[in-house]
Image (cartoon, rainbow over all chains, first blue to last red; front, side, top):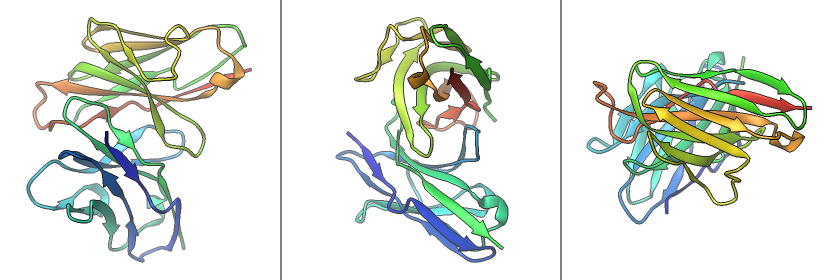
Length: 112
Length: 120
């Protein structure tokens, strides 16, 4: 089975500062990794995904993540955040053809 | 891109009644749909997996007689909460995996907007 641990439940950050949201996964086989964002009372939107190939993945809204197999991590980063980035972020792991397993989420709060 | 639409987005019902939530893939064929439930400030918990034309597979602890899932076509899956009670109040989200859609990579799920159910 695959599992995901998001190490921070809340991350407060000032506008225009960099941010890193941490995600570690556990799996005995190779998996796909995803980051989703959820705004209040809305569904999930895909930010980026790692399937194979380059370990540095670039997504929408200026986010990127780096897959580190030795550390079983897939941390999400953004060099300069905006107020509009305030949302819940979920890291997810899965195998082809199966449902995704989600972490508990990290609440990113960007303040002026 | 692939679009998944859920309806209704908000529903309030009385205890004991049944509520149906629809999940549609608008521009692709959803061979597999997943239903998740999300409690406030918590993560998504998988309830069941449905493949078109076959019975849904429920996760442990999910009552199949309470949460009826139908996946009658490649573009529509429904979740019916039967005899709803206040503890069924939650945010229900569907997601779909498709085929034949250019640019869709293996493993990616597309999510609906979610349906918030409040049972009085």
